[in-house]
Length: 155
Length: 117
Image (cartoon, rainbow over all chains, first blue to last red; front, side):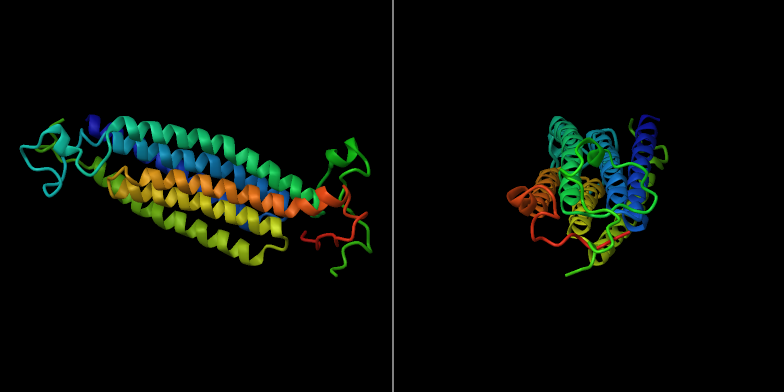
């Protein structure tokens, strides 16, 4: 019963993470604009990888509850023998939580840096963009050339 | 908890779902590679490469679940750090001429990016 509940939690978290990952990749492929793609990619990637990491942490840290295959754990195995080939539970949980925290810090920072660099480099926004608050705040400071006919000729 | 007398369909479901998940993650990686090949601007390619590294993190995570070994978590940490570092390096590479020579792309000699809408 316990094993089944833990497995169901693992599967639910994994499906959530996989859905976020695939929706992010799909948005990266389908959306019309660099900024739209960044919006899809960064958020979905954070949550998707967090889901997968959480599923793996749940699965690996509960591996002492499941009967091991015979070639991995003999019938009269002690606890250390059952953990042979894996690291103990505390290391798995710590690394997983650290990775999730790192994803939550690193993904917004990277997306912000990349969006700022692209804005400075003059990446155009798509047709339906209704507001450019960075240009409104400092007109002429950072604004890429928008809607200027002679500007976007590739040289 | 003995689990030897009862049928245990839970771990089998987890492993089966992990197999499906490997396929899904690889499909996402194919989409990322397509965006790398298609992206009109360097920032698109950098964003797609970042997404690809995140997919790689997910792939190795799923593989460590599949292989029942937590040793791959060190590799996952290294992959995450390298992906973030690569994104920061690409952003610095894109933004550096504008930060060095003046703020607006119209003032310096760097041609503005092509329209990618």
